[in-house]
Length: 236
Image (spheres, rainbow, N blue to C red):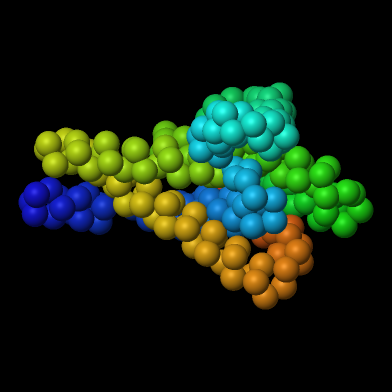
């Protein structure tokens, strides 16, 4: 096992971290950070997860069995709005590969602006159901890194993939060992977003959603910087 981890370290050192790759990985992790941050706010304010639904599907069954039909229907609505967000992404994004032809920056800035607009001017119920829709759009963008699709609103798949690649590394297949650290970094960033989400909510209350708007607009702007850098690099 010690040899496997030494090989993992050596494999990671061999990866060329060019400026574009570093900015891109930072951008990806900011997206994951935003997913953790917003999901935590959703749990605190509304009592339900809004970024992933494995646990929520189980809760639907539990609530129905306990005759809490209203809450069960509410969770179903959250799930349907998340699914609707996935559909919108499928309509907007043309391919499952990351491409600068896709309007990621515009979409993410619109998500941020929508959160602010609905939070300020619409009833709580509309605001609540808009959040899983927007997160569904984000998670359906099919943003990838080195051929690996990165889901940015939950970590269940990341945890599974990290475990699988670690198992393969221990077996001697170490060509994809860098993915272990990549997935664990993504998991930590989601946790960090969640942790800071509760911290800021305890300090500024519902204004924490305004901070989410700032985060999304920042992520959108970084995308345009990334795109411009990529175009300059490919011209030279």
